[in-house]
Length: 107
Image (cartoon, rainbow, N blue to C red; front, side, top):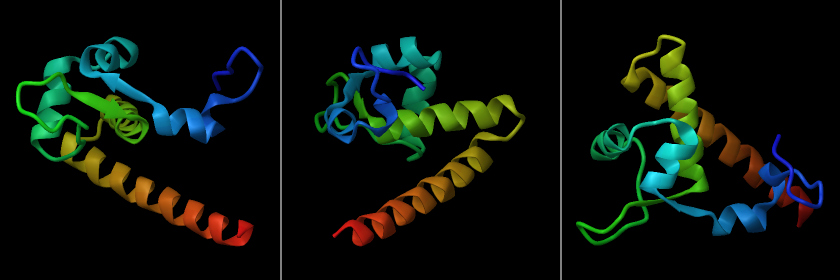
């Protein structure tokens, strides 16, 4: 896990993750996924950018970057794009459900 300069695990820094918005070029550079491929995944509805206007630089939040990384990993293991997307969506739904349950316990 990546730590920040204070030694905190960034994957659990929810304030940081909520503010994380990265342009398509930076996402491609960091993840190793080509911008063309990212655009294709968005056209297929697998991921969504935060950009509302056509022609503007696409920007992605943490959730979509995480989806991209998971899909990339599954495809490297031999899954098709569609099978990867289904598997990732199920995983993301399970994580969201679990986090909502945990949130209820905290309240």
